[in-house]
Amino acid sequence: LALVVEPIQDLGKAYNEYKQGEPALERIFDLMRFNPEVTDKPSATHLQHVNGDIKFHDVTFRYVDSMPPVVDGVNLHIRPGESIAFVGPSGGGKSTLAKLLLRLYHPQSGYMLLDNHDVQDIQLQCLRTHIAFVSQDAMLFSGTIAENIAYRDPLGDINMARVEYAAKIAHAEEFIKMLPEGYDSNVGQRGSSLSGGQKQRSELLLKEALRNLMTNHTVTVLIIAHQQEMVLMADRIVSLEGGKLQEITKLDFLSQNGHLQKITSPN
Ligand code: ADP
Ligand code: MG
Image (cartoon, rainbow, N blue to C red; front, side, top):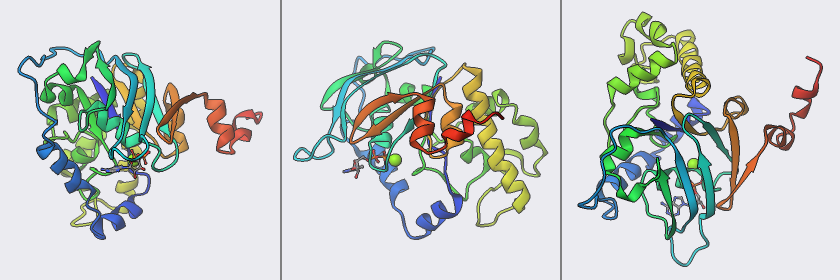
C-alpha cells in the first residue's frame, strides 16, 4: 500500500476558503469522472498485492501546451515502506505530481512505475485502491473522523476497512472508539459534536496516525507537507520548484527554513 497525503495546515483558513466557494473539490471529482484520458486499456493489469515501490522516470507535464512544464523532467525512486515529504513554494508542482501518479493526468513524456508496472497499464480502480490519496483540496473540513483520517478514495468512496486498518497501525483505534460516535464523529464546524479539546486531540491523533504510518515502514507514504514537524517525520525530503525536483537533506531543509539552531543547540 502507498499513501499520498496532504494534511490541512490550517483548518480555519481551509474552512474559509471552502465557504468562499473554493471549487477545488468539485473540480477534482469532475476531472476523475470525465477526463476521457482516464480509462483502462483492455489489457490493464490488476495487482493483487502492492509493495509500494514507486518510480518517476523523466516525467514532464504541461497543463497547457503553450506554457512551460509544471512538472519538468522529474526522476524519483521511492522504495517500499519509505516516506517522502514534498516541499516547495505554492505552484511548485507538488499536487500535480501526485495527480500524475494517480493518473488524473498523463505526462507528455516519461512514465511512472508502481512495483515496476507502468501505472498506465494498471487498472484505475486497482491503482487507486493501492495508492491512497488525500489532498488538501479534497479534504472535508466538516467531515467525520473517518473522512479526515485520509482515506477518501479519489472516486469518492470512503473505504472503512482501510480507515480502520490505518487507525490500527497508528494505534489510534482506542481513542476513536472512545468518542461517542466513533469513526462517525464529526470534526467540523457545522453540527460539530466535538468540543474544542476533543478537536485538538483529533488533530493530534491524525498527526500521530501519520507519524506511526511513517515510522512503521509498512506503507509507502508520499506527503505534501506544510508543517515543519510533518516534513521532518519523513525519511526523505524533496523540493519541487518550477516543476523541477531536488532532493534535500533535513539539514538543508532546516537551514533553508531558518531553524538550524533548533538542531544544533545542546538540547
Ligand atoms: P503545488 O501543489 O506545489 O502548489 P500545483 O501542482 O498545484 O503546485 O500547481 C503547479 C502549477 O500548475 C501552478 O502554476 C498552477 O497554477 C498550475 N495548475 C495547477 N492546476 C492546474 C490546472 N488544472 N490547469 C492549469 N494549470 C494548473
Ligand atoms: Mg498543492
